[in-house]
Amino acid sequence: MNFRNLLLSLSGFAVISFAMPGTAAPLSSSTLPLVTPAESFRPGASTSCVKRFKQYRAGHYDDPVRLKRMQKTRDFYQISEPDESHPVAYAWIEDNGKVDGSYWNEGAGVECGHLHKGQLWLRADATGKTAWYGPFVYTAKDLGVDGVYFHYLFGNACYQAGNGESWCFDKKGITIGGRHREARLDTLLPYAPSGGNPVLVDGEPDNVYWMFVPAGAGWKVYRYLNVEEAKEFDPKKVKPWKVLRP
Image (cartoon, rainbow, N blue to C red; front, side):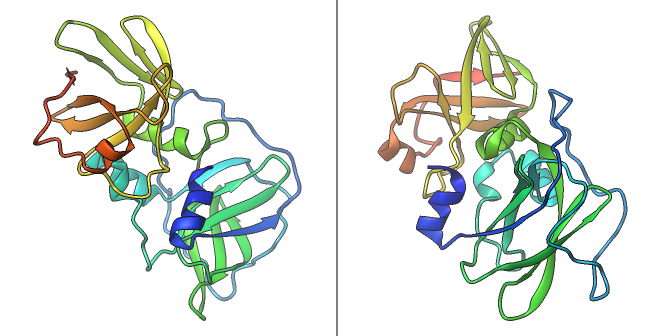
């Protein structure tokens, strides 16, 4: 189950979609820089709004304000709470041109969209009042929702553990002491852990988390937390397994 479907079942998240023909452009960079709109633009009543675009870029589109807040707080769950003032959480364009978006309000529905210098805007009737939501900026093509947030959270940074072991992050996982292990941020939890980012790491038992808690410019890592332990997790009461420093 992906993040969108979980929220559909737990929070009334509704999916919006419309088709757009064309070919997709792959992500050329291995990094995910934070893209901020270059200019102030707000669509209005006279802005063209169509269901099909002649040109587009396939991939995940997200709210740059939310991404910037996540990078500042280093806490995914602070940006995952429903925002009634901005009911569209994120959007994406598939290879076949179909555009989907995730809504907090299941009563919302998209009418059409507008692309302005690579920024995606969606026009929808969310609460009985037609409104534009955006901009959503392109982030990546091949990472999926979990991968996008994992990479924006950890970047390509490297750290040192207390024993001198190196921990280096990339968009697909973590290299620990020279051994690469695939990892992803778990965006499926139906509750917000207290002050931690739950990560699933390749090679660990199912439903066992590594919890990453910001510690200065580094991280405290808590290992072997199952679903119930993660739910009750409190970093003030548990000794970390590793402390990572720049």
